[in-house]
Length: 305
Image (cartoon, rainbow, N blue to C red; front, side, top):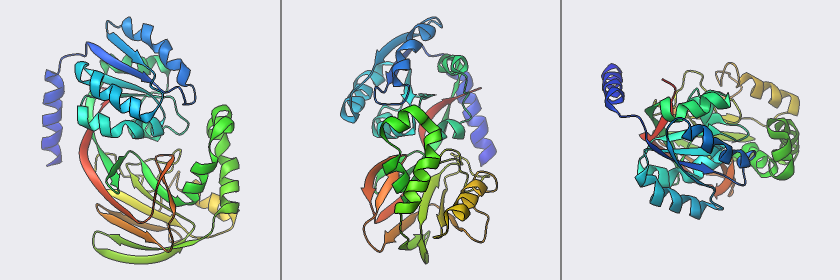
């Protein structure tokens, strides 16, 4: 029962010793990634031993977490959702609490965890926050944090790159949304959600873990990143102004709208009329068909007390 889980979690937190050593990881390719090294001194001033690294690629990131992560109390990742998502296999394997310092553009995991936005408060979280276990989604066996999408979402990920992403951050999204809409074409999919079959033609489809994705969109405002459920929503092919209206509604009222297609479940499959690129936590890395699942309480993260 939920209340029993809450009591057990509280008891565990009360018996956990404060962290002594942390692994601080920066991403040299992320927006503001070079700021990570500036956190070493503030963390050491809290009495923490800090091992700082900036791995060049995903393989080096996994190796670093596997080798050094076992000898520290917490792993501190400075980066966006894509950086954290790329590290998930190693983080799950090591099992140490993760502290997120959001250096990315959308930072939807930080929204899902209600993390502070002020850098001083984020630094204080490293030693003073408490671990909490959250769900992860899976797509074709790969874990993900926030969402996987096809159609418009994949087109946005392909265009939201390079200098414009670094210089403009979230301000680059309106520009790439319009460009993505011009390039996107509707697609037909067959969906199975917990044994229920559906078929439809859409311009955008996303499967979401947690409450937020896509820079603050909320398919189901009542969702949490620890409810062991996924949300699928899809947008029909429509003029750009109508599309913007629907996206604005997804920031306020969610997908409780007869013009939008919405499902909630734990196991979802999506097959498209032809192979489609897939945006997984902001990175293009897969193609359809897709099989989704949930890993309940799979990752330990540090949140405010």
